[in-house]
Length: 369
Image 1 (cartoon, one colour):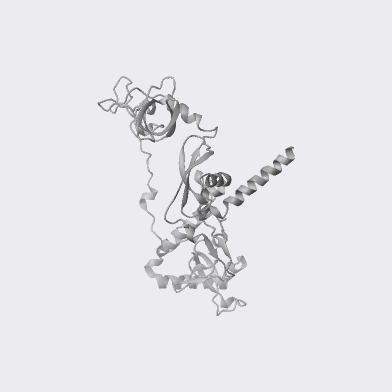
Image 2 (cartoon, rainbow, N blue to C red):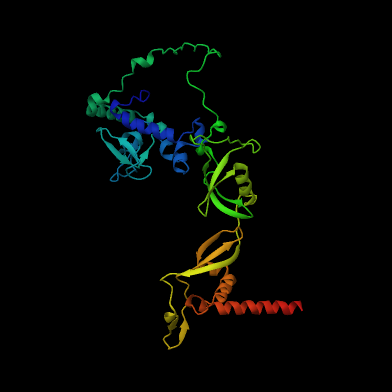
């Protein structure tokens, strides 16, 4: 503002113009990764066309819609005060007129060198400046320089820290290492689902907590080295009983149940039970009457659930619609063995599935003979 002799009342527009230039200028800030701040913020390539055409408070020609740009007398002199982002088109600019008012114009033209050499143009510039000062009065005066800016500021000096005596005891006790803290928040076994040996069989349960003595202190110590880890955990079995196991025993069986990527795969062994609820279709509604009077079996699986036993010994209940899609033959054989072929949920598809199975097996046998 001091270099262009800008009136003090335009400090706000000058600040906005300076901020726009800094937004579109590469700086040494490492987080910008060599891009301008506007690009990092919006993701779009920065456009500087509205900033590089004119300088701050530069004398320009501008015209209004009712003017014709063929004659120089139709143009008016103004001061460019930066782009007006929220008014007019993309290239619209704040233009200060000789009346001390702003207009938003896109028809702004630079002043040529031969025009600056013209006496007529110099008279128009002097007339513009006198009218502007007459309108702005005291506000036309530039900002007064801050006297503190001219003073030489001395670099502050700080007294060096007193040397630390290694024999002195620290005021704050040192924190314990995470490996030395025996707390359940740092325990990786608690809440794990495990399969543990129980006599000649296996039992499933959940690791609940570390075993403690009568005073609430943890029994033995945990360690990253399995040879030094003597911690004991209490496992709540699915039957409701609670038994104690060494940490090495629990971790050994956890690793034995997963593959190299840490995943567990279970396969269906057999379907051991079934049940239905009130939403299941009854035998009285087993058929649907078509418009031509023909009766067809109702295609439904609603209301039925099957209990599946997996290769790891666990069991779980699943809806018929899911198991029918994943294990069709196992479900069909379970329905045939448990006399469920008359139920509407099985009658419309089980016999056909079993016949298809027998036909495929027969074809395979005939090929091998």
